[in-house]
Image 1 (cartoon, one colour):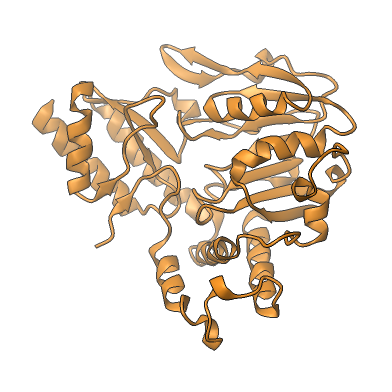
Image 2 (cartoon, one colour):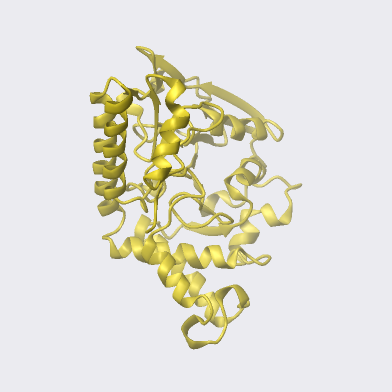
Length: 359
């Protein structure tokens, strides 16, 4: 049997997608070769790539004046690519700091421009929260405003899209395709694939066309969005297999009813897990309700000495990768699109049994 995988990334993939990839591994559509052996310049692969983009555009209702790029290097490479692409004409940007990933992004951006840091993480009644926008010291002349929609490690998520005057740039790595997003509200969206899109090795960048001429002159060619857009994300050999698998995930999402249908399932999963945690004296979640992530659910045990035993017994029940990030400890269940409701039900049942035996 396949286990329920609660890893934050690389994360669970839909079983149906893996089974299809397995069936096509050695012989794709009767061609006698694997996707991994296929030239990215071939008509067959170009058709695969174009369909993946078309399906993503359908899933996210991406306007025509946005380019969709399938890039390498992980979302972390975009911490450099974004300022290099967007600070060429105005060297100022605002970065909203809500946790580890937004901190990594702003520290890299400081190498390339004048960065105004907005410390938006706060505490309300002892729980972590995001402060009201009225408290932020936003600039009047920023080239863009950057934020991480969902802090994967901390399980902290924005309750709404910030309303700013400058182009809005967002790291959606942990939340993309989990809920509907109005792409037109953003200048640029980026996301590592290994959470809700596909396997590691691919990064999506969705960028508004009018921002393609803002690059610094010293930007490396491979990082330049305008060049990648001009060459269909094939300026060099792309991550062909990751792109192909991501395309299968997009097809699977459309078959499930699209992003809105997945959002309803995700809300049900989150409600079940948070509801049980809130009802228990044995478990606790450190985030205020309004800013709880529906994808990454951190929780602690009343007695941290039981953490190792919890993880050991969870693994015996085929509930995998529940350890919290090394920087924060505790537990974390990442309940991305590919984690079914039954997986969260199994987790809650185990948590309840464990609490009754050790509480």
